[in-house]
Image (cartoon, rainbow, N blue to C red; front, side, top):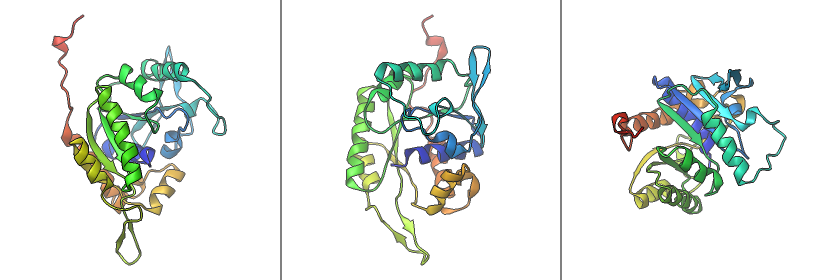
Amino acid sequence: MGKSTVTVNLAVALARQGASVAILDADVYGFSVPSMLGIDRPPVLLGDLLVPPVAHGVRCISMGFFVDDDQAVMWRGPMLHKALEQFLVDVHWGKPDFLMLDLPPGTGDVAMSIAQFVPRAEVLVVTTPQVAAERVAQRAAVLARQLRLPVRGVVENQSWFTGDDGKRYELFGHGGGETLAKSLGVALLGQIPFLTTLRQAGDSGVPVAVSDPEGEAGRAFASLAERVVALGPGRVYRSELSIG
């Protein structure tokens, strides 16, 4: 839950730390990244390539640029597959340090297409503390490994709410992220608090990593970004070993 919020704020936090960052909003049915970034202009066509718009230092391509907000996308697998291919091939991404893909929930066509198109992709699993969410996230992680995509870590969203009294209240339970990380044999990279400011920031188009970087959530995303950078690539590819 909240994976788009995590994706957007992590991307912005990485950009604020000096990385070149782009997002492919691969949640074709439930696109939300452009509005969360506050982008209200479409990509620019340059020759045969689309140049993605930029907000808060993050480039973005999404189905949201090509359909109205109130329009339902009713596509079967082959159409999804083709759209994702075009988003990857027909877009001038440049050479970002991080190309982040916000995937839809579950284990459907999009995840399998991404494994085919981006075989070097690595996966961060977003979950929430409750057991039910942890089990759903675990299935997504298992699919990633079946597709030979390395799972690099777990992010627990909505971990706690800090009341006016300064106490932390674990509204959605405790330990789901840690349990999932242990079962997958990876690190729990970060825990993101459950705050009204996160929702308000997403609605306004100014992510909390920008609007309140020194707040509780902003600091959590900055720490998460640092840990993601520290991970480094899971697999190193050397161009001189390529077969032409």
